[in-house]
Image 1 (tube, rainbow, N blue to C red):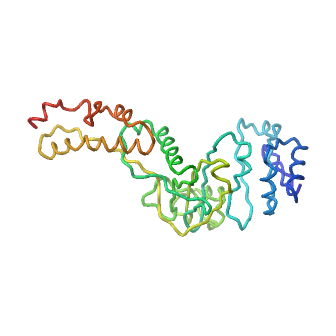
Image 2: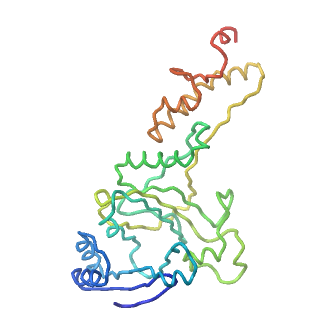
Image 3: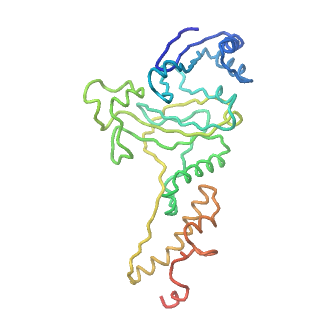
Length: 302
């Protein structure tokens, strides 16, 4: 045991060992449940000279503080390795796990070096009803992309240069917020509450993983790419004016094709059944014409 702390509602231990057997024995004797197969993973980490951060909830301290939930743990450490250990957490996992990685860097976008980093689909035109079902749409979209990549890919969902803001996808984080998140290179002084441009680049990565498809810990690198990216989806509201000019008639004739493309795009992105999508779009069965559109005979004289 190299260090012991009580921080808030957590009892913290920093452990090291020369062999996995010793570490595993100590953990079991101190009431920690070690899943089968952990010894091999622990041994791999020990060979790399790693330490182990153990956190146990201190219920007495939690009741004193008055919190009904566990607050997140923030850890700072120095290492030449830009990586995230995930293998130990997969030993007793019940199926695939979901992970979001937020990286705040000085230089540019972050990507994985031992797995492919792929951008999620963006700038696709989808039916209007997606606006009211966006959470379900996005979950299905992500699951479909994971399936297409055989769950062996890390996805880039968002990357943004906070050194400028035109346009801004959200208000930039204030200096005091950035420091709380570990951004130590900001200049001291000034108004810590104000927003505005900061020398920080934000990357958000998303992956679904298990031990079969992600046998290695995640290794990262910082790139010089400062190009902004975010997953965007386009909703087009059809014009509903009553004009009868040639341009209006031509526009209406093109609408069914647009609706058809939107339905097919959504089916491709999510894996949803295209016929069910068409019904939600209020399209006629076996057709791409809106059910509330003009009757067929009107088109003869249009």
